[in-house]
Image (tube, rainbow, N blue to C red; front, side):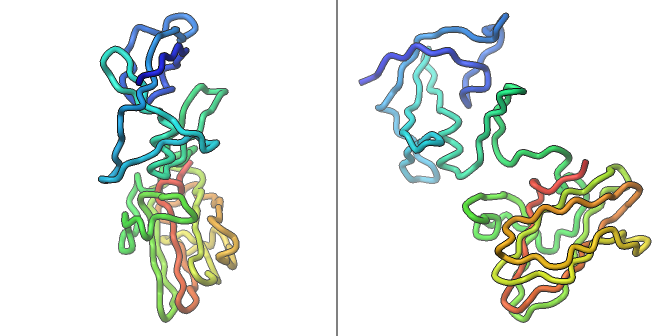
Length: 225
């Protein structure tokens, strides 16, 4: 049985089916729609239960022949953050980035991964990452290429199963040290590092990885600005 629903909906409130020309003036319009409990949703072949941020069940909405899926439910099932910014009146799906993701420019892609086993960290899937896990430890390095277009690099990195030490970030072309980060431990979580990179073409990151440990760098959550 369908439940009647009278709702005020903004253009960003639902994932699908928003039409233009409806939201004049205040950008709100009262409509009559239905919560349709008969619609079942499968994600990757499995029945999915959509929940809001408080864990309450959400149902699809039927309106004028179209089915609308609450975006909070999509986020909860796919484990993708969904944040409402009341000030800008935006709904942000995925990682909120305040600049240009590092993946938008050339980068050292030897350890590039989209494998969910490597891209998922503490319950969040970062989709695209640099991931390296070394049984015997070692001194790997990776780089990004801002090409002198940006002033700052906001780098996010997590230590996996052991410490990262002697982390140094430098200008690859001049060998000038840009930041001596020191040590990152697994307890630090996803560590954010801000580096001034004005005039720098290529940024190199050198580090020591302990035995049976590694690192993960999200390529969308890390960004230039």
